[in-house]
Image 1 (cartoon, one colour):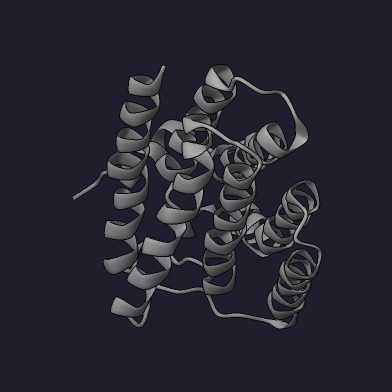
Image 2 (spheres, one colour):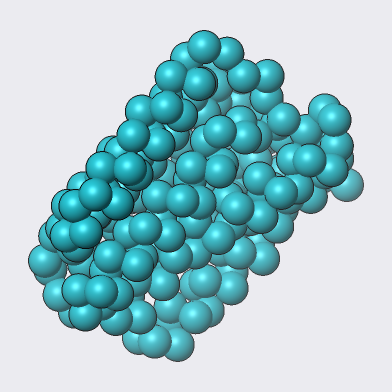
Length: 198
């Protein structure tokens, strides 16, 4: 099972995340910087909380769900057209996400940390979910598809079904599914082909 997690992590990162990075650098994808920065922070906290509660390699999908967005966030600075213009709603969701992270820092309890990491990630997801629904052409679908499949793998191999071990993975499963639907609901095959276009 460990080998499957490693292979899944590599596929998700090299096919999903790096395709998104390439499209971001080219200006074809326009990530919301608040979302992607907070998408990195939330999973990193969820991963740390899971490890502190005795987590295993099954938490690798949680870590990878933060690492990919962090790389995409950095890539958004390489092209002036490679980011989404932020509005009041984006900043409000970002503020709520940061508040959830601060509340986690004050509690220091693993289960509470996972809950606040989920809330933080959820608030961070809302702006991009709405953007993807209205403007799916600004997103790279393969990143969300590989993330969704990788989270399924993480859930399958998990050894403990406690909230600290499973909570963030279940949240990611729902979140990634919603992102796939938002981005791919119109002409999914055409959108997928466009992800890899030269």
